[in-house]
Amino acid sequence: MQSEKNAHLPVSTTLAPFRNQVFRSIWTATQISSLGWLVQTVAISWLMATISASDLMVALVQAASTLPVFFLSILAGAIADNFSRRWVMFAGHCLIALASTTLMISVGLGFAGPWLILGLGFLAGCGFALNDPAWHASVGDILHKRDIPAAVTLMSVGYNIVRSVGPALGGVVLAFFGPLAAFALAALSDLAPLTAIWRTTWDVRTSPLPRERMTMAIHDGVRFTLMSLEIRAAIARAALFGLASISILALLPLVVRDQLKSGPIIYGILLAGFGMGAFMAGMSNSFLRRITSQDRLVSFASVACSACCLSLALTSSVTMAAISLALGGAGWLITWTGIDVSVQLASPRWVVGRTLSIYYALSAGGMAAGSWIWGTIAQNYSLGWALESAAGALLLVAAAGIVLPVRPWEETDQESSDFHPPELALELKPRSGPIVVKVEYLISEENIESFLGYMRARRHVQSRAGARNWTLQRNLQAPSIWTETFRTPTWMDFLRLNHRLTAADKEVSQRLLALHDGERPPQTVLSIERTTEAARTRASTIVSRPPR
Image (cartoon, rainbow, N blue to C red; front, side):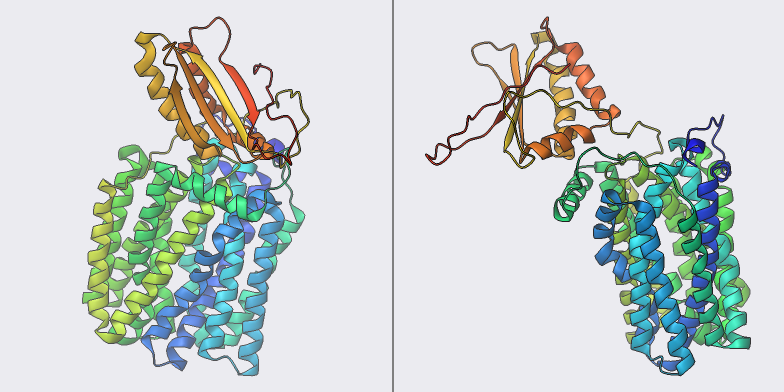
């Protein structure tokens, strides 16, 4: 329960999140569901390879489940930040269960065609798009901040443990019992997360303000992401990595069928090798972070995936292919874990669902585009040429770290701080506005350079939280007086802005206060803009008391 969230942990180890019963329960159920999904994925990919002669249709199996994440994740992130994340997760798993059950019935009745398979994969992808931002954002609600890197690693490691078993199990089930049994197992496994989410609860710090409209919530999430350099760089790196690295999984059925001349059991074994490599990387992730930076780790991971692609293009040995895939799986886990944690730790709680959803959307978009690109190259040229091209692209992604570095993992206070609205002389409605905010500072000549430096940081902080038209003016008649001015569209937007500022954001205000020379703190004046039209007669200016 939530009381466990604040339990004292001397050092956050890789297994520390398992001390929390809620995380442990949902994590376990998620692995059961993932096992069923991987069995189903093997069955779908192999079924498509046998009923369709098109290499592109085989590669599009990966795209079908990832494309919805690209289209729907940003909306899902806004939903996760405005509604109960627990129920959003439940709804997402309901969609996944519906897709698996429908696929099972379709195969049982004998009318599962290529386009129906892709369509149901798309429906399951919609469920993942709804669930994943809510689940990953909930980690920060369930656990202490210092446990987030370990929790994200455990989530990736858990999936890749299952990846080590699921594909091999899927190959065995497919070979001996047929696709119907595989799809039935997947449908049954979807009951585990539905039951776990239904039976567990956790406390979430809620905003005292009403929910945002979806359009405004999406707009604010996109604006925050675009104005956060570290998040922007991480997401761009993820999209490029997804576009290039998905070639490994998208083309693997063709490698097994055409180069290795093998069947579904070998396909499952090779996917298990990929998962085993990811598992080993996850277990050694803490050690690797101690000996090198996270950014360098992500670059090395891209090189490892490049080596995997090149080896698959050149080998005809199952053993060499399995070793190569283990290397690729290690690179896969290190990259996605590093970027996921970087985005989480750089995001305040009020917007974390949206920043994660944008990350998922663009990385999934990269993977969907990559599936189509590499499948098209394989179909029009050759499988080897597609894998060699992907290897070259992954080397370029590794080099992209020079201009798109992944931030180091740091623990900063991203919780929204308490805010008490100022007393007003006039009554305002939530939609009243625009609101103009002016803050006056008295700065001595020797402190101007420091003041301007902190003001640049304050402009970034305020604008990211919702301030518009931010400006800084210097009084020509009294040069020591500086005035910060910005606007918000409505009174409710002003309240939201101040509720969004974290304790870390307010450190900038404290530094500015230390530079202020006046006997009283900087004076804040709140006004409401008015036009001079005759039809509007209400008073135009509202002045608040100085902030306390």
